[in-house]
Length: 576
Image (cartoon, rainbow, N blue to C red):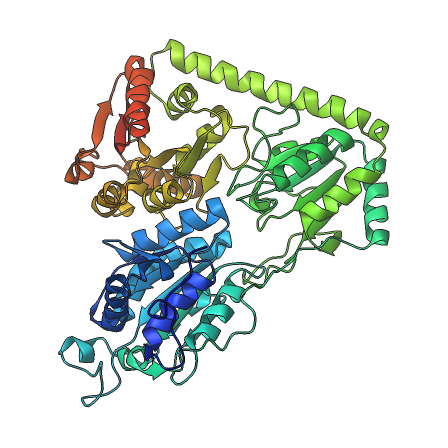
């Protein structure tokens, strides 16, 4: 390792701004990138970055990637963190920049994704200090309680105030971001605070904090083992078992299901929890198979089922590190027994103790149930293909021609999600991610973050036309090319807001809105959704003929594999 010179290694005699210490601390704690949308409140950080770069110390701090919109920056960080397991930093400015994080904050909050957000504050002094107010905007941007804009979505929020060492706040913020339930944290600082010179000697005593998830005690494991062996056809319901950046959860669930003779339902999954071609994969709607099971194991899920669609008669065992769901105001599912521990660790321990012979009946039942379900799916798809229809199912099936074991699918198709889950044959761990919340538009930025974090993989983003509008498409298409983070985006374009239409018809099937075709649910004027990609030299295509689907998708993948960002607008049957 090359020895550092005194100019590269700060000493007690070297002046250091708090802003520089903040940047160095982020890198020391493993942050590789700052995804930033910059403002006048960031001048101390920009000066520190430029000075370090000039002096040859640019590698001592995270790389700044400029993002043209805060929603996109947050989604990039979300995508990077969820696919690599490494939280990154997002830099935004004051109140308006914080507001622009918007729905992306909600997504990271609900998906339990760690992101370290840094925001400026309006300067606190009129004059006389480095960073004092020097523009009318510094009065306009001054608000009473800026953190209140996002605090409900944060695991921690703090303000840097000198003469404290910023490293302590960085360490604390990252610790809270990565502690169950993981999520965003928010740190603020004024220009004057970041310009303050502080002691350059770090005050930290330990750079690494490990939060270890543990299983249940031996007695509990034995009790669970007995309950599962006594069941005829146990069922596991999960949404995000294990870390989304690891294969452990999926591999554990496969071994458990095969040993116990258990069916598995992925309910609103945020990542791939179980191979989708597995003979025990019972689909995505728990209520559809409640009559087949006599014991339900709810493992790592916030919403095990929707009670309006049905409630189980079988006993329910919950395995979760956060079983009370403290981040949800209302949560009252009928749980028979709760075990507060890591679901993956518990299932590993139970599997070791199970008698495989006890699972014979369950294996026979789930093979039958799953086979019947898949036959129905094949029949539906064959009927649509024979009629030359361009449907979400036909598109999802066609994607199998370009999805291989090195592909990562980033998905936000909303009302087309059911067909993506049913017909896209994903089997590899870490091959599928969904936003986890309700904030539309996530996939654009998330695909950029995933490409940065997993540069050797092929990234395919699937998005509905409504979600595409929400994604700030000009911003992330530009960023994809600028950051050299190509992906293929496939738009499920049904020319309207299908979620609006279906929910209205469900609640008021014979109402006035139904008689009038649900006003506002259909786009009256078509739009060229590939146009935003033309801000850079991207590969684009619009498909209206099902016979062209595979050809167009293969061309898009070829472009991405060559390093060119690609967007394909697939004009599906309009919603009716």
